[in-house]
Every structure is written in C-alpha cells, then in structure tokens.
Image (cartoon, rainbow, N blue to C red; front, side, top):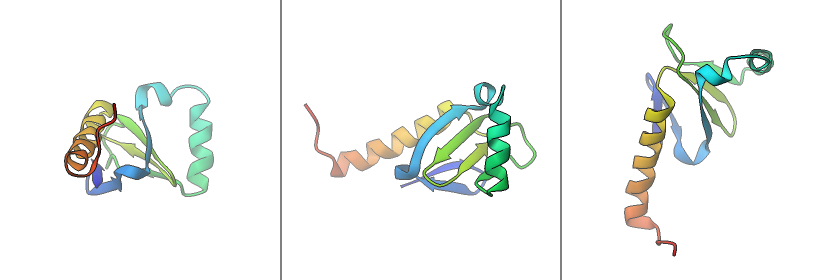
Length: 92
C-alpha cells in the first residue's frame, strides 16, 4: 500500500526503511552525506519550497518531506493495520 509522503508523492510501505526528524538529521556531517547522494540523484526534495520536516529513507532513494515524522508514522501504521486485519495472522 502506498504511503503519501508529501504533495503527490507516495512510496510503497514495504520500501520504507526509516523516517527521521529533519531537525536531527540536518545538523553536522549529514549535509555532506546528502550532497554526495544528491550528486548520484538519489535525493528528492518534495517540500515545494516549504520547510523540511522529515527525511524518508527507502531502499533506493531519500525524500525530504514537508510532513512531520509522526504524521508519516501514523499513516504507515494505519495502512499496516488495514492490511493486517485481512491478511495477517496474529503472533503470540
């Protein structure tokens, strides 16, 4: 199921690896890391000129999102719950 991470951008929930608060990621040496990935065209800024709030890491790329990490987590959790209600076996 797709998780909408900002604007019209969605990623498949199973591809999500991490959602990081932008305030914590944007400090220090992380900017150099992002620059290297930008050169490889692996970073997509989907803030549309707005303020970044989260970094969404998938198995193939990174997205700078205008949506808070908590909101993205809730969206992903809600989709997983909907899927599990019909397809998952409860673990004990």
